[in-house]
Length: 215
Image (cartoon, rainbow, N blue to C red; front, top):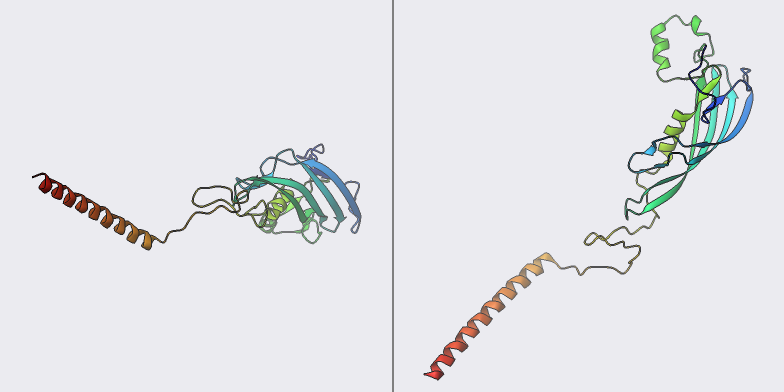
């Protein structure tokens, strides 16, 4: 069977050395560049081309190869409180079974499974080995996204931005605005209006007195 996977891709792994004997183990470590769009769109993610450290454990089982591992990388994004750029170290654990294309979930030959509809339904959620190769990218993508914070912050106690003027409160911890109760503000405005009216009346009265004195 011809393969669609490229063995030169750093996220494609070869299991031929592992073999198909159940119980066989192989450990692998590899550094690979992060693919495009590796994170939560518009929030945080691992930049394309950034290095990812992969530690894998491959185990041969009846139905395929069980892959267990951890991916470590540095994600970048913006703090949701102060909007400053941040860097987040992510460690994503994962485990996935890559199935032999000629075996069902019990390790039996698919030729012995008469119900084609059942096989097709199972294949929708199954990752297969292709000529002994498997592509780890879809597994890594899901694992990394789940490991990333949905609301990333630059620090746990980030004070954020002032809701009145937008100044960064982390850099200006003593910053504040005098709070005025809107009920008192309304009364204060009314009092100022009355005072202005009284001044106008007093000014008019004084002008009348001056006119009488001139006469």
